[in-house]
Image 1 (cartoon, rainbow, N blue to C red):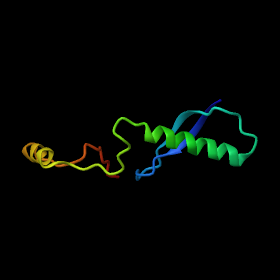
Image 2: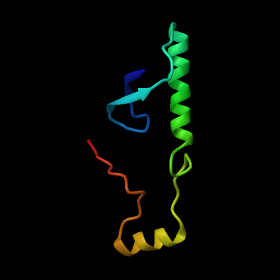
Image 3: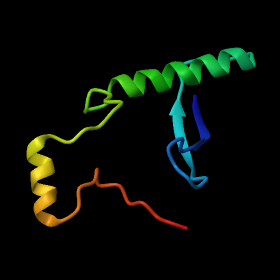
Image 4: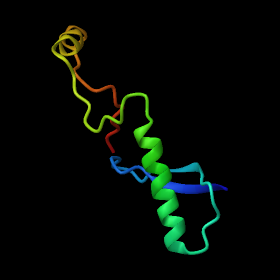
Length: 82
């Protein structure tokens, strides 16, 4: 079964909402089963990420040195001030 779910970005200062497509194997008959299926699918997708599901990104000393040479040490995120 294919579902479309609206997801809010948790780390964002603005309310960025994206539409994500989720596949679940069975058709749930209750809301509890639907929520459980969506959560299970999200956990499976998170655990299968290429980066190993890193929760906290960090910079190595070499990366910090490279960024210092450029003049800006960051994680590559685009921060927008309002």
